[in-house]
Length: 467
View 1 (cartoon, rainbow, N blue to C red):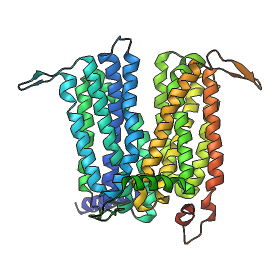
View 2 (view 1 turned 30 degrees about the horizontal axis):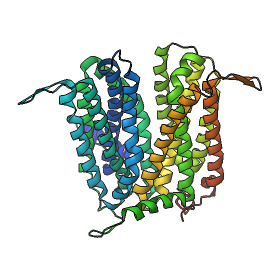
View 3 (view 1 turned 135 degrees about the horizontal axis):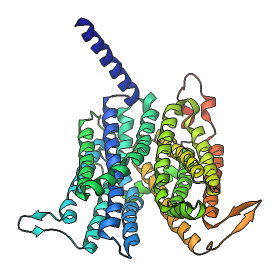
View 4 (view 1 turned 180 degrees about the vertical axis):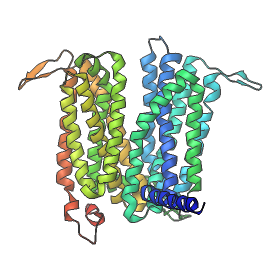
C-alpha cells in the first residue's frame, strides 16, 4: 500500500514537472488550453457554415458560389477594417478584462444564431425560421461581429502572455500559441462535417458557443498582474495620433518591417493557392474533384509539424534564421509542386509547403512580440495581421482574375519547363516568397551565431532593430 502511494506521488510530481516544462506555468496553461479549444471551434464553425450554406441554404442554386464567398468576405473584411482600430484600444485597456468581454460577446453572438437558423419556436413569436436571403444576412452579420471581437481578443492575449510568462520562456509561450492553429486546421473541419451531416447545424452552433464559453472560463481563471497601459487611468488619448504612432513604430523598426513584408508575401501565396487550388488538382494533376479535400488535410498535417519544429528548434537555430529559411523553402516547394503531374508527389510537396508556411507564421509571431515594447503590442498586432489578411484578399481576387483573363489559354515552354495559367501564377508566388526570404536574410541575418553566455536567448540581438 505504501509503495503504491509512493509511486502515485512520484507520477504526480513528474506530471507536474512535465506540465511546467510544456505549459510554462498555470496561467499560461489556462490561456493556451482556452485558445486551443476556441481555435478548434472557430475552424469547425467556419467549415460548418460553408457546408451548410452549400448543401442546405443554397443547394442547387445558381448563386451558391456567391453565397459561400460572402461567408469568407464577412470574416475577412472585419480583420482588415476593424483590426487596426482595435489595436489602439487594446493598448489602452486592461488585457485580461478585454479578453473576457470579447469572448463573452462572441458566445452571445453564437447563441443568438440558433433560433433564426434552425427555426425554433419561441414564446409569443412562433417559428423564427428565416428565408434564405435573410438567413444569409444574419450569418454574414454574425460572422462579422464574432470576427470583430476576435480583433480585440487576439492582441490582448498576446500582450497578456508578456505579463504571465517569464522573460526566458516568452518565446516558447508565443510559439506554442501560434502553433495551435495548425492543430485546429486539422481537427476543426472533420468535426464540422460530422456535425453538419450527422447531427445538424444546431450542434455546430452549440460547439462554437461552447468553445467561447471555455475560453472565457480559462481567461477568468488567470491570475494576471495589473496590465500595463499606454495611458494612465483617467488620462484621455488621441486616436489618430496613437494609430499613426503604431504604423510609424512598425515601419521604423527593422525587425517588424521585415516581418510585415515576410507575412505579406506568405499570405499572397496562401491566397493564390486558395483561389486556384481546385483548378490545379483537376486540370494540372487530372485528379477527380473529390481528391481536393486531401490537399487541405495534408497541408494541415504539415502545419502541425511546422509549428512543432519551430517550438522545439527556435532557441537552438534562432527564429530569425528559421524565418528566412522557411520563406525560401516555402517558395521552392510551391514552384516544385506547380510543375508536378503526379498527385501523390503533389501531396508530398503540399505537406512540406505546410511545414514551411506555418514555420514562417510561428516564427514571425514571437519575433514581432519580442521586438515590441509593451505599450505597442496591440497596435503592432493590429498592423501586421490585417496587412497579411489584405494580401490574401487581394491575392484571391488577382489570381482568379489573371487566370480568367490575361492568362486564359496561356501556354509557354521556358528552359524545357511547361507553363500554363495556374502553374505560372504559382511560380510567381513562389518566386516572391524566395525574394522575401532573401530580404529577411539581409535584414535580420542569423543572430543566434552572435550570442554569448550573458544573452542565451538572443534578447539583445533580436531587439537590435528597435528605434
